[in-house]
Amino acid sequence: MNFKEATDLLAVPLERVAGVVGKTYGTVLAYRTGDRAAPSEVRSRLADFMRRHAAALVEAADELDKQK
Image (cartoon, rainbow, N blue to C red):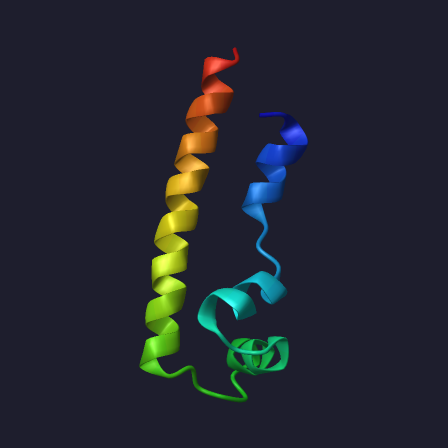
């Protein structure tokens, strides 16, 4: 894993979040700005994604450490 790949993992575009939670970009943006409240099933999907993403970050960090 190189530096670019590692830093790409840190940022998650809202378009990706929208796909993960099964909503449009505009709806996810409205959730972010507080114009709409995310229903519990959307929050649950986001939480699941966050856990998977966190695990991927830990794995990537371990890989970077091995390259020392």
